[in-house]
Length: 225
Image 1: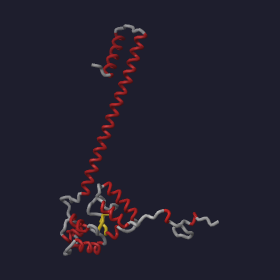
Image 2: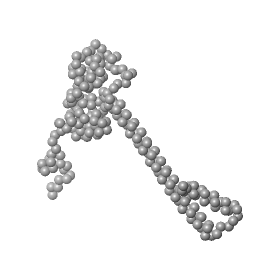
Image 3: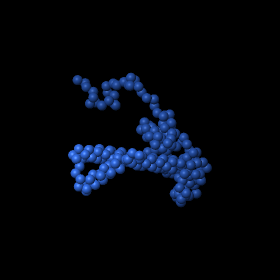
Image 4: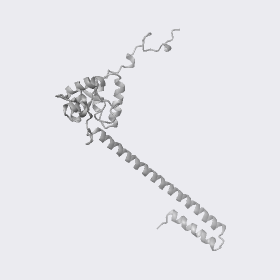
């Protein structure tokens, strides 16, 4: 069986030391051959060790990347599953604003949430309808949208009325929804579709006309000389 370079290197080194201990003088040619072989084996051994270290480092890097990927996937599943922690208690159960208040439907409760709190509050709606958070959201789909900029990875926070969400800078909201949808495995698909449905059609460059005095044309680029 062929010896490994490290074993061959160790044996040659030992032979060289034994020759010196015996006091026998090696010929210059023999000595040169031994030195050359030792150096060659040492270079080969160093290369093998470097390759092994590189492979070990790559394996460790891949292991860490896989662990991080699995951690992120688990986190995404957790924040998008719409399951509440078993020990979570609705803060509005002991709030004076919901004392004796009851709504017959999620839609009625939405109106009351807007009137009382000035916003869509899933906890408030759930507390006055006795519906679960998930059922409230399901009942109001299309009337409310969750804003990926304000949800803070909590399935019952960041909700807005459709009028509020589907207005303003729609292109910025569309980009935010697209990015969040990709990151959270399709969780914001409805947002993307809703925004795309109301986005104005793109205007081709050939259809844009510039006239002097247009308020959107900076005055410093107009040369009247």
